[in-house]
Structure formats: C-alpha cells, structure tokens
Amino acid sequence: PLVLGIETSCDETGIGIVRGTTLLSNTIASSMDEHARYGGVVPEIAARAHLDELVPAINAAIAEAGIRLHDLDAIAVTCGPGLSGALMVGVGAAKALAVALDKPIYAVNHLVGHVGADLLHRSIHTSMTDTSDAVPLEYPTIALLVSGGHTSLLLVRDLVSDVELLGETIDDAAGEAFDKVARLLSLPYPGGPQIDRVAADGNPKAIRFPRGLSQPKDMAAHRYDFSFSGLKTSVARFVEQRQDAGEPVPAADVAASFREAVVDILLTKALAACADYGVPRLLLGGGVIANQRLRQVATERTDAAGIALRIPPLSLCTDNGAMIAALGAQLIMAGSEPSTLEFGADSTLPVDQIQV
Ligand code: ATP
Ligand code: MG
Ligand code: FE
Image 1 (tube, rainbow, N blue to C red):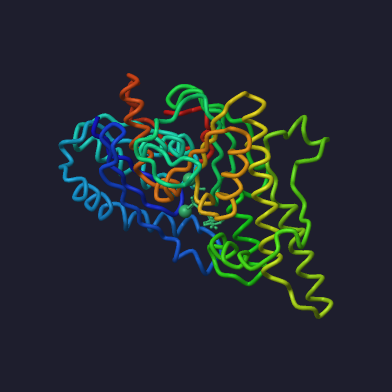
Image 2: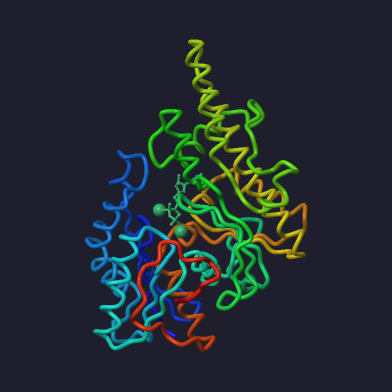
C-alpha cells in the first residue's frame, strides 16, 4: 500500500511516503535552531513550527515520491507519545487530509514507529557498511530507543501486535543528559554532537562516573530501567570542584568519561535483555544513535556476544515521517482496521498500544 506518514511529536516535522517497505520520500524540517538559545525543545515553539512546515513538507514529499495525493491508499500519523501541542498539529493535519481525500487513517505509536524504521532500508549489519540485500528484521528482537525525549528498552515479538516495554528512564532521557552535560561544559545545544567532538581527545577512563541503576539492589525493580540524573549531578559536582579550586576543567576527559558511562549502561542493559530473553538480535534507534562511541561499543559487544546488530541510517533513526508511514503500511498488510476519527493526541501513549 502507498502510505503517507506524518510525524510531529517533537521538533521534527516529518513527512514520509512509502509503498509497503519501499521508501519513496522522507522530508524532515526541524525547528532545532529555534530551541537552541533555550537549551532544549520549547513545546510552544515546536508546535508553531509544525504549523509553518507541514504543508511545504507534504508538498515536497509528494513531489519527491512522484505521486499525487489521490494516489495514496492511507494516511498514518503519530498520535503519541510526545509533546501534546506538537502532536495535535500533526493529528489535525492528518485528519483533514484523510477526510478531504476520503482515505483511511492509521493513528500510530511513535516509539513503535522507530522500530518500524528498520523495515525501510534492509539493514546495516555490524560492519556499519550498507548491505542493502541483507535479510529483513526477524522477530523477536530487543530494541533500544535513545533520543532527547526517550530511553526505552523494548521486546518486539511482532511489530503490529506485540511490543512490550521492558524498561525506560526513570528521570532524564539519554539525549537530555548529553544536552545538560554539554551545557555544564559551556558547549552549545544540541549537546550530543558537541560531546562526541570534544570527547574524541579525552580519556574515557579519566573519571569514573556512576552507572545509574546498576547496583545489585536495583536489579529486582529496575533491571532494564535507566537513570541519568545522578550521572549529570556527578559531572556537575566534578566541574564545580575544579572551578572552586581555581583549576582548569579537563573538558575532553569529562566528555569522554561521561560518554563512556552512558554508552556502558545503555549497552549493558540492552545486552542483559538479549541474554535474559534469549534474543540474539538488537535494534538501535533514536537520535543518540548518532553517537560514535555508542556505535563502536555496540558493534564490539554484540559481535562478542553473537548478537546481530541493526542500526538504520541516521535519517531513519531521528524522528521522521517515513517510519510512521512504514508502520501504517504494516498495519494495513496485517489487516488492521483503520482508526476512527475520534482519536486525539496522547502525550503518554504506552508503547504496547501500537495503534489507537
Ligand atoms: P524524541 O525523543 O521524540 O524522539 P528528540 O527530537 O528529542 O525527539 P532526536 O531528534 O531523535 O530526539 O534526537 C535528539 C537528541 O539526540 C538530542 O538530545 C541530541 O543531543 C542527541 N544527539 C544527537 N547527536 C548525538 C551524538 N552524536 N551523541 C549523543 N547524543 C546525540
Ligand atoms: Mg529531534
Ligand atoms: Fe523519536
């Protein structure tokens, strides 16, 4: 089926068009620059930007795909989780389009969409080279989604019918931690790429920062959960101590040691889930997947454990409409009924609710 996907859960206005699992276009407009001076995404600004960007993005996507709106079989849209105001812009646009074109609409889960992104490119294996003829994703798989708003570990038995949340962050998201630590080091927003750059010259073993929720006492209730606020506080304390003592802050070592702690805890928990559930497959998604060290250590550890690692290209890892279209197409192919037009935006939509 030919599906147009609309994604507006955070700061990306994403419009994607797919035919089944074939990607036809993936247009992304980000309001990132407008949030930079606030050091994080401002919901009101994100929502207004979606309103400005949606129609141009839809036009660009249909032009690139070489289709007309009337050719579409369905519209898919992210209805949660995410920022309420931002979601509402996409939901409103999707409903209007569906009614005007008299097409079915599929209201879908953003996080499950991230997993669906994998369908579109036939995977990149551990070597990180594009093996476009590689086998499609097999189930079950463990999925680790890490972005500015989410840090979630999922057990995906079937994309359209069985996604289980194993764990998530109990405070900050991983990307948020990168952004906050970058600010402590006086680096600009978004912090992730900056930390990556500065860390390249640092020693990851210079400072032993804490790994959240990794003590034996945490294992019962929080085996697959994450916590990054203690790590951030620990970095803040280290920086303050140096400043108070009138000593220079070793930014490269701090960045490298912080990054190492985040990467270590993310992969330790993801691989524990693979082992516990006997699942030899790990899928990564979300904007933090751009992190160089995370990619490197993920490759090393999955190779050592005999786990197949899948990392979609970055344009499909960060928020985009193509992954939403891909999930919509899967639902159609699985025979799911369209959503009724009563659905709204649900900022806290649980991950096991794949379609609303
Ligand atoms: P959502 O959480 O809804 O997916 P988002 O817009 O917060 O939305 P993304 O756009 O996927 O998430 O990712 C942005 C986050 O990724 C930011 O927090 C940014 O700092 C982080 N990031 C980007 N590049 C890197 C990197 N190289 N290393 C670590 N973090 C990175
Ligand atoms: Mg973003
Ligand atoms: Fe996302």
